[in-house]
Length: 254
Image (tube, rainbow, N blue to C red; front, side, top):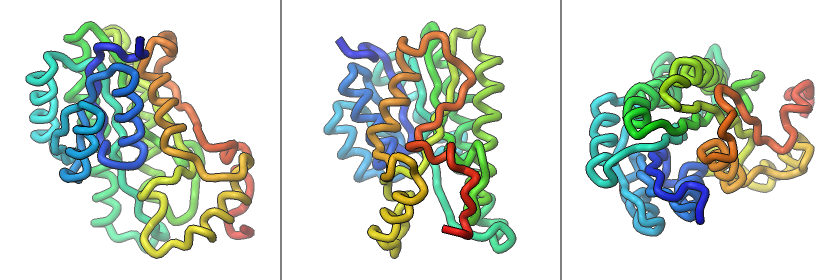
């Protein structure tokens, strides 16, 4: 038996990276997974491989959220869980960040999580309760240079997580957040970056001496989405190889 047998779970940003890893793991654990993304070709291919349903979803668009939930309900009859994973990252000094770029990051990372909770929570409640897992970040608990807009949205996600956990508890919905550090995904490896230089950086910064794997974040999301975490809600869970423990390290000295 799987840890998610019979459950219907929506995973956003599921075409690649952490979202893809979660979709694959959840499917292997018995869930009927609704994979949502804007990368349609890749998302459809992953959905076919895991036996799930793919839906196109711009997480910053409320109408598209409604359509995605309707598709999930039409296909499977209910929704039991949500992994709000979709996000974008841009590197820029805060005072050099264009307003348009800041607003774009807020729209995807912060508004996307808000709309996910707002749209999916009533469906989960109608199914008798379930779980919401929001993808925040290591930077939700500290600061980091050149990712000011990103860090601001991830701090906001923790606030949304805590408020939702309080407000939705009576509907039997638990809400938690995963806070990954450096994870080997396309988002964390921008075009033009030197893989060897990045590997060397992570070896110096991360006490465990390596970058994280998407599957390691997915296993945490699984824990928070199944009965193993039945008495946990409103909490951030860091998965960063010990990076946060050394947050006092000055970036300009590295």
